[in-house]
Amino acid sequence: MFPNLIESNNRQIVESPLIFDDELKEYFLDVDYFTSLCEGDDINMYIHCNPHNPTGKVWNREELKTIKEICVSNNVYLISDEINMDFVRPKEDFVSLAALLKEGNEALVASCLGKTFNLTSIPHSYFVTKDRKLTKTLTEVTKEVYQVGNASSLALAAIEAAYTECNEWVDQLNNHILNNFKYVQKYIDDNLSQYLSFDIPRSTHLGWISFENSGFDAELVHEALVEVGEIAVSPGKLYLDHENKHFRFNVASSLARIEDGLNRIKKPFDYLYIEQNKGTP
Image (cartoon, helix red, strand yellow):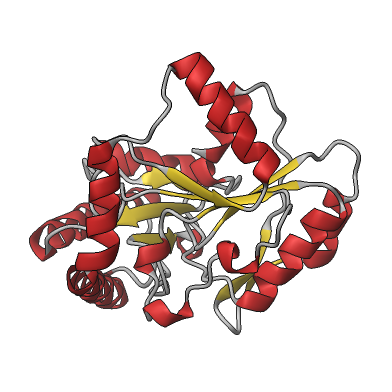
């Protein structure tokens, strides 16, 4: 989604890839490289994903503080997308960039209830900032261009109810998602470990599954998932995985559908294995 938004606004994407630590099984920011990018004259904005989609990384306070300080010191506007903030397990581990904002910082936090409560049909996205200049500009633009001067009463009621009355439901939702992830991990360990590797993420409802160990051509895998398995998973290249050796699997569903989806994933990998070994004695 981020790449499409950037390019559609006639801006150029500059990547700062995360580094994967094999021992810790976690992604980290390459701070030195990120700093060198922000110091460049051609970088004006950084879009941060907190928690990170698709890896499920949960950023700690020190990491966020470092990112914010680098951006502020180099006049790089910092936008933190926190739409998946309710899917951190345990929830106490989540730190919002909003907690680190100071008056006048060129930074903001954006979120909505679309993921947690499936309320995308109600226009209600919001942002949190201490950049008064930006707030004034956005208020003027939305009023002049879109003729919108006040927030929707329905949206405000939905946000208030979600954040003050639905905590038990969100906890139950996260337990359901975690149980689904445990099922996915066991299924892969029992049936697909020769092809796939997967670790349960600490956040989001999206599994980031690697098929690097399979040795299969990336394009053949993604084609087989659709043509043989008849399943739509998001290919890694959509998330700047240029080798395209991952796919994203949504577990925010019933266990029966998760099981069906995994069976559909297994089918194309078994097919590719047979095709690869045809004629082998």
